Each structure stands twice: as structure tokens, then as C-alpha cells.
Length: 243
Image 1 (cartoon, rainbow, N blue to C red):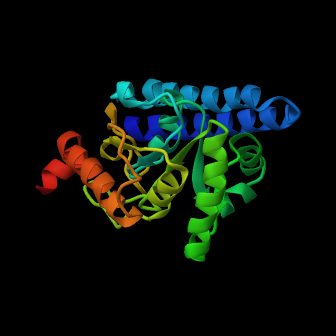
Image 2 (cartoon, helix red, strand yellow; image 1 turned 90 degrees about the vertical axis):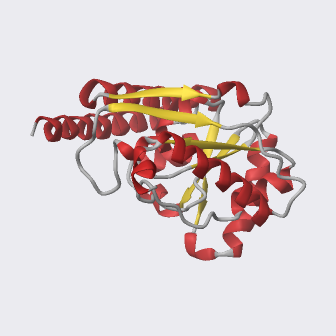
């Protein structure tokens, strides 16, 4: 019961903070992008703090030495809501590839479009969506903005995986930048469609850059997926329970 109540507090505080930060960023729509980015970074840091304060969700980052000085495509395992915002403070300025419908959410979605300026796609658009990611992603990378991709397209249950979408690898190849893979065990503590959050340390593991220029995108995807899934077996109890 206490864990349920703490989880409720985290959701209420996180939602309230999202609305307040979003409203504040809309009020400062005229400010430089670097100033507005601080709203995103501060919100993500605050929400990580709230997760630790209310639910005992600590975060440890590993492998930051693998990050190059130039923008890259980040490919992240997707098992919970935590990694969507939790990785942001540990990287340079980044943006997401996400579903377009999120931008229609009042206040929050409007601020998301203004500050994050994401690559908002229609998941059912197929090749057209891939072309959009490549075109807009190249512009972001050329302007010094990293691009975060959740290649599985949606959250999967801890211990499971699904086919990686090709857009991230295709973007990296076309833009001539490496891919940074990231694995984490957030799903062990914050499971999909589960209200309560378990206390523990979420490990964000950043892998070494993967060259996307020498192989077709589908084959590069297999290299990325192999690194991520092997790392998941090492750090995630959900994977270890299934082995």
C-alpha cells in the first residue's frame, strides 16, 4: 500500500511539473533555443529526483566516456517511461523521434513541439516515415542536435525484444555519423502497464560508437540490437530470470 501511494505521488508530482514547465516554456516562446532547452533539462533532472525521493528509483550512468564530441544517433532500449526523459541530462542537446499524436496534447504537446522540436512521425506511414526521419534528422545533426531513437517503436516487456525499425540506422548512414547504443534496466523497476514502481538502481549503460557507414542499415541494426540485448542480459533481472 505504501509503495502504491508513493507511486501515486510520483505521478501527480511528475504530471504537475510537466504542465508547469510546459506552460513556462510557452510563455518564453521568444527566447533562444539554448534558453528553452534548460526547461527540458531541468524538468528531466527534477523528475529523476522525484523518482528517487518518492519511489527509491536511483539512477547510475555508465559509459559516458564513449560519447564523441560530435552529434550522433542514439538508439535506446524501450521498456518504460523512465528512459524517455531519464537519458536526457546525460547527453548533449538532443531531440526525439516520436509519434505525431503526442504534439496534440494541450500545453505539454505544444511545448514539446516548441522546445524539443522533435521529429514527429506517423507510425503507419512506412517508408515515408523513414524518409522523414532521414531528412529532418540530417538537419538536426548538422545543427549540433543529437537524435534519440527508440528502435522498437513502442515499449516492450522487460526480458523481451522486437524487430528494430530501420530509420535510426538509415539516418546514421545518410548523415555519416555513428550510432550510440544504450541499454538500461529501468523496466525491472517501472514496468509497462504497472502502476507501482519498485525501488532500486536503474543502470543506464552507454555503449561504444557503432559505425553505420560500412553496412546496410538492416545489418547495422543487427549489430546495434546484438550489443543492446547482450547488455540487457547482463544488467536486467527480467532477462536473467528468462535465461
